[in-house]
Length: 169
Ligand SMILES: CC(C)(COP(=O)(O)OP(=O)(O)OC[C@H]1O[C@@H](n2cnc3c(N)ncnc32)[C@H](O)[C@@H]1OP(=O)(O)O)[C@@H](O)C(=O)NCCC(=O)NCCS
Image (cartoon, rainbow, N blue to C red; front, side, top):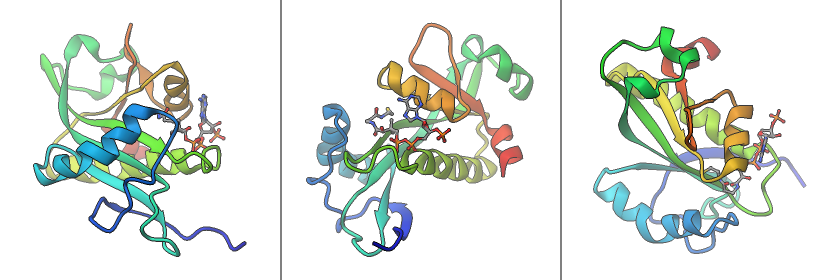
């Protein structure tokens, strides 16, 4: 079988949301029932991973929206990259999931890197100091830590200064 020809693109009407399952019901339900409305209302951007040979089939997805975090929540390791305002501008990678049957193939990492790239580009247009993620459980925390994020104290939230993404590029 030839290697997949992967791309990420904004969620659109031709993507088959009903077929997607990642093993976490809330993440499947979000895609089926709420993602379309979020996109229409511009509450979240939703990007999906597809193989161009099967462009309707969603292999993974993630969401991005604007948020802010309090100065006190900024992880110590990130403080030197963040201004000392009481509220720090940030972008939220709120949800991320890979379809069952495709997990463990590097697709999750691909989606995280894609989200980092889009967050960085977006922050150049509308400033944003941090990329924040909300992990769904401890396993997801470990996944994000393996991908460079630092955990905020006593929470399932992790963060990465946007400028450090620029240094990775
Ligand atoms: C968590 C999830 C997104 C990971 O995606 P994936 O495609 O299976 O992960 P990848 O194959 O891209 O792994 C990327 C890296 O993270 C590591 N990793 C993956 N899952 C991990 C875990 N649970 N704990 C620690 N590290 C993990 C991999 O070892 C890999 O590291 P490497 O680059 O050094 O080899 C996916 O399993 C999933 O969708 N799970 C259900 C939904 C979920 O939990 N989402 C979490 C976000 S809210």
